[in-house]
Length: 85
Image (tube, rainbow, N blue to C red; front, top):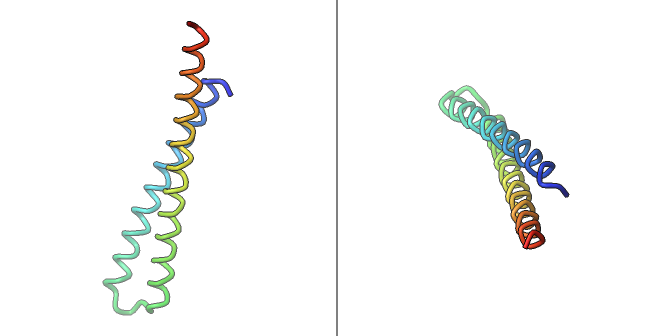
């Protein structure tokens, strides 16, 4: 894979990661608001907790994917550097 393609994928992955972090913040705000409202059933609060946990899992998976892409780019650059010598 070319370095330019990897860089493009890294930027897209970083953007997705930022979007997911924003979603998690919003989900956490909603969860806290729900927890303060004594009229909201416990089941709804639990659903919001599950949703927040799912977003966290997506963040971790996206971070892993980003790390993998960065490692691929580092490997490609090292190979290019070796071939230039």
